[in-house]
Image (spheres, rainbow, N blue to C red):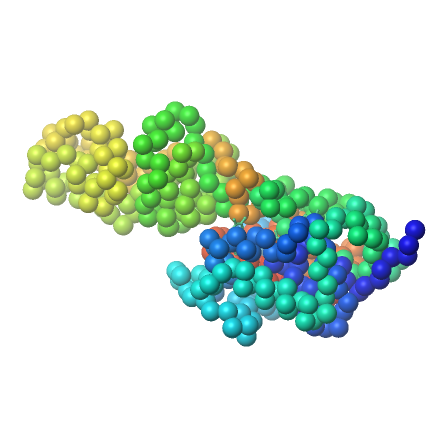
Length: 395
Ligand code: FDA
């Protein structure tokens, strides 16, 4: 057997976190190889943010992440901040804009971010080894040895940046979780996050005519609420507000939706009844809801009656249908369409300043494989940059 090629650091996964880590480690003079089984690096970056990559959120803070230990992210986020990443984007001449408050996107293509990372790590002397599979990993006296489809490798430090399980079609695997378990780290149960929710066939049949309708809604699960877009689909509900709440929701639980959160629906209906009793409730609802939705709710609650014939109790029922719609989604669309994976490598086994495993020196876990999952809006890439950066300073 030929002797292994020796480097200081092997990074598994050429995604956002892995490439940031390799770039930083290379700048510190480490010899680095980044391995990925995909043919191209940073595929999720390329398709992110509708092709424009929502590369950070300026308000990235522990409260915007889900984790068994939300405080774990503080150190990395403080050491490598959204402003630090923006500076890097600026230095590479990538134009960007703030879409909604704090959410930063490329003006041009998400490929610019991928190019910045691949060029950065190459300039720092790190090597990208694509279309390479890892068949075995062993602990050695001074680090790790890896059997790969392009030959054996030996390294002092191993960084696992293989991401989550979301979108298997794009190369997601459970390798990171398997490695963590194999080296004795605890792995918390995983589930899809930032994902559309599905409804039962009966509900779907009733809502089918609304497919394609979008509103600005407030969606609540327990004490957590988000105000953002909601989209009726052929399978159930989607849109940013639903994706956000999906990370908190679990099967069997209820969510509550306000379809016109800024409107006092009861007051509007009562006023209209006093002024124009001969109109239908749906005409009033259509003043602040899309017409199809207004018609659907108006007819469902009142039939074809005029407002003049509706007592306050019925106006209250319409109000509840608009702003207190409680429903139990049946499931999520799963990893097939989920943007992220919740759960993963338990942060209790990692040092938050370096991302190094507490009981396995020189083994690091960064990015989405770790039990730190952001809201929608650039938080997940910021976690990838921050965790990748801190590991890059330590390897
Ligand atoms: P990432 O998944 O990026 O990289 C992991 C790498 O490991 C991949 O290149 C993969 O091929 C490789 N790999 C996996 N298994 C392997 C194996 N067995 N052997 C070798 N290599 C292996 N976030 C955000 O902040 N803003 C946004 O706009 C979006 N938009 C978005 C859109 C869509 C459609 C998705 C699916 C996701 C987003 N996200 C997002 C989330 C974001 O993409 C995600 O959180 C980061 O890419 C995570 O970065 P990582 O580097 O941890 O994993």
